[in-house]
Image 1 (cartoon, rainbow, N blue to C red):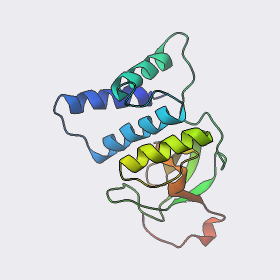
Image 2 (cartoon, helix red, strand yellow):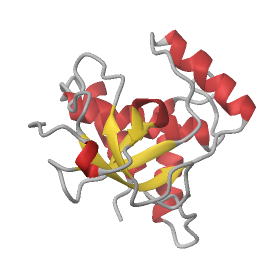
Image 3 (cartoon, rainbow, N blue to C red):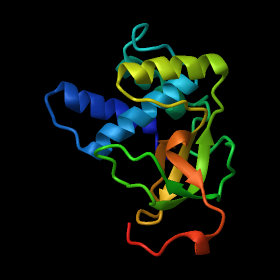
Image 4 (cartoon, rainbow, N blue to C red):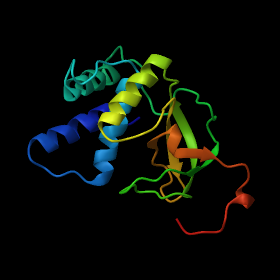
Length: 167
């Protein structure tokens, strides 16, 4: 299973060395950071994000590794739920209406974690209350789970209710 923390740490190292990141690489880092907050890791002012990512990467890779795998938790919507993208932001790889399937979740965040998340995200200009972080396989990217906050997707009842459109 892919170690998202190791990937994010390597991307932060790349950026620190002066390398440029693609939008997808930036999103991977942000997904890992959300997972840090949901799992109750120290906030960036207490421990640099790169250090926290390194520690989590080691814990996943070690002999006595903890399970921090994509898709381990159950969310409000179960694995296999068909979803559509909502609340698209500028630069998102998938636009409103894009279809996918939930393959896993991380959460739920406790009320205090949610409050911390709202504050941290607001500092970055992002509005939203996040209870779960979901991993979704988008229809146009099968086999590649992508992290997304619950406030940016919605379940769809039946495929026949989805307008025929190109993603």
